[in-house]
Amino acid sequence: MSVARFIADQRTNYRVPHTVTCLLLGVSLAWFYKWRDRALGPAASSGLFTAMDRRRDTIDRAVKVMFAKKRGLHGSPRLHADLRDD
Image: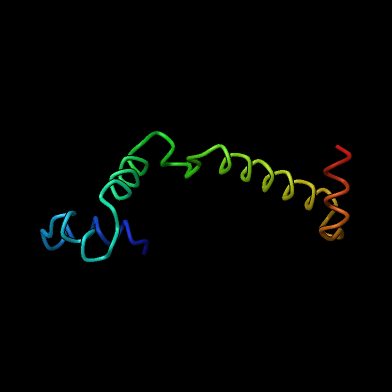
C-alpha cells in the first residue's frame, strides 16, 4: 500500500482528516492532493501519467514483442541491437 493510499484510507475508514495524517507522516498536503487528483484523472486507468511513463511503456511493449518474435532465444544485448535496427 502506498503512503498516499494509506492517507486516503485513514479519512475513509477512521474519519481522520488528510491534514492530520499528512502532518504525522511528514508528507506535504500539496503532494497528497497531487496524487489524489492524478488518481482520479483520465490517465488513472492506464497508470501512464507522465511522458516518461508513456515512453517506458512503449519500450516495454517493443521489447516484449521482439522477445516473442525471437521465441525467447535472444538475451538483452541482442534484443537491444534488434530493436535499434528496427
